[in-house]
Length: 272
Image (tube, rainbow, N blue to C red; front, side, top):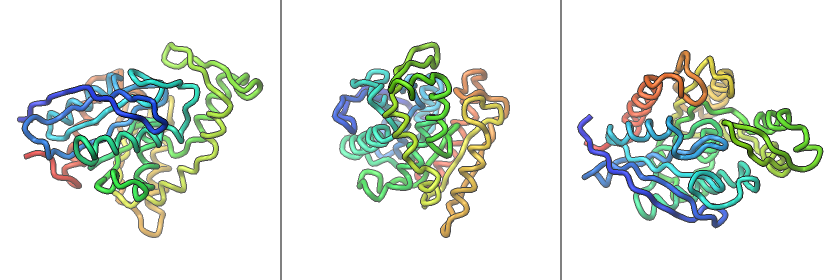
């Protein structure tokens, strides 16, 4: 690979003012290396094994990465129960603004699961934020084609959320407080419409064995992005045998990271 990775911790104000924690995996000696903005999944954080290993491999291949914790998660401040898809988008845009001011504007948006949904939405609406003006492509890893499915899933996990206005669910072995307001926000977003408005190359990485976000969501994203008046070039990487978090086989992470590197090289100019 030929590059030396240098990682550093950063903090910046999120979309609603809470201090967010981030890590920059930079390419030593290449301050002009394209920057990837990496958004994590629902209830996850920047230190999820898949996010760490993919980020480091990208940096080792000449792509700088800013991975960050959304409000109320990981090392960031704030109350998770008060967050939703709207605040996720606000945090993503805040991270992009931080990168544009202190690093360089993002060239590629990358998101895992619900973070992939946020990345797709941000790609469609990048015109509203100058910090996203240089984005050349977007990658969704195990991403859903809508946000309503998560509201339905959480409601089934604990009907008390809709009956009493709040309740707890267990995800990843941890208890999370979910509110009716969060579900209402998930239901109001029309991600499918936004996907059809993306005017950037898209790479979708998904496993047919994903038990959390069905493989059909990847096919739906491809259809939505390709059926507009100005269809986006969409590539699908099928990760056969992988689980949702890419935790079962370390080779899956290498496979995905290398595909992202090759995709990025087609649409950006990595460090030489």
